Amino acid sequence: MMTRKFAKVNGSLPGEKAKKLLERRQNAVPKGVSNGVPTFAEKAEGALIHDVDGNTFIDFVGAIGVMNVGHCHPKVTEALHKQVDQYIHPGFNVMMYEPYIELAEKLAAIAPGDHEKEVIFFNSGAEAVENAVKIARKYTKRPGVVSFSRGYHGRTLLTMTMTSKVKPYKYEFGPFAPEVYKAPYPYAYRRPEGVTEEQYEDMIIEQFRDFFINDAAPETIAAVVMEPVQGEGGFIVPSKRFVQAVYEECQKHGIIFIADEIQAGFARTGRYFGIEHFDVVPDLITVSKSMAAGLPISGVIGRKEIMDASTPGELGGTYSGSPLACAAGLAVLDIIEEENLNERGTKLGETVVNRFRQLAEKYEEVGDVRGLGSMCAMELVKDRQTKEPNKELTNLLIKEANDRGLLLMSAGAYGNVLRLLMPLVITDEQAEEGLDILEDALEAAVAQLAVQA
Image 1 (cartoon, rainbow, N blue to C red):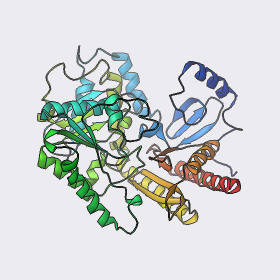
Image 2 (image 1 turned 90 degrees about the horizontal axis):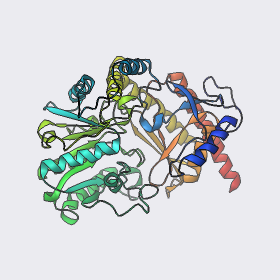
Image 3 (image 1 turned 90 degrees about the vertical axis):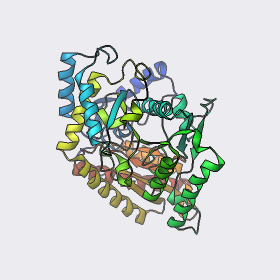
């Protein structure tokens, strides 16, 4: 193994300290909480995480899209220290505080559209989606909600119902929430053989229009909730024409169009919001993850007349929009602007996609390369003709990368998509080293499977 400047793993994982902590974890924490790499963080900065045994990892996961501005950015930690010294939590429902208002104003200003907007804060992405649906139902006086095949929206009852992947998210957790429908969402790589992308696009759009004839009456639907780029679904990017067709149907039938930006937002795709790539102005936008650099907060940004349909006490929560998270969120917006992270997201994505395409030329197992901005993925298959998913190779690749000091994560309905969500503040040198490790890990994983065969 060649010498690395940033990544460093001493021996096998887990190390001695991590083994002791793993034993404690197994005794105290349910196995239902999954973990990626079998070790424990001690310190982190930028795109690097150091564990308790002195190993250093280049982070290509970013806490699943939470760390767009990097771990422990100095501006974020400074904002938190300042806020802690003032007050921690008076509770917005009891006594209001300025950081909540300021963050709401700034998010409203950068969100798509020149209409009047209002913003409300919650704690998690799932809470944001739940409340966006509540707001849409209150405004339209309709019960139904439409999500899409392969979509992911959370683990609460409603958002779990809206989510497509059965295992591990839904299996044996029913019964589910009523009045939730699934519409078709394009997956160009897996379109029927012999069908062009344009023909496939036409087919999916027609299926969506027919959905309101065959599956649900549009007069009963409050909202359509769409991820501009499907996250857990495998970083699937729809065409602009499809997104606009969905929006047009919503406009036609008085349905609220909700853009779920929880994973795609805050410069990840090269824009503040992924939906901006599709020339569509959503009625409501849900945000979370990278919104506050690791502090728990989420929000719904929406048209004023829709947001104001609810009366006092109908929305909110004990910790919703905590002062600490609002302070961090304000720092994040400053960092994105000052460090040109939207531009960085685009450039970083180009670097990753170019490397993935080189890997596709070298390895038949790389079936597809796709992404928007730095929300990039490659899909691994056993055969390019049949496109049979290769989950085994994906899992082995991730383990080999971990052992070399690179954090990776999979996605997709078949668990065969490698998705990258590295902090956008990662240096070019760190990114290149991480991609080198990824390539080494892929080579090793392919070789291991070849020997086993």
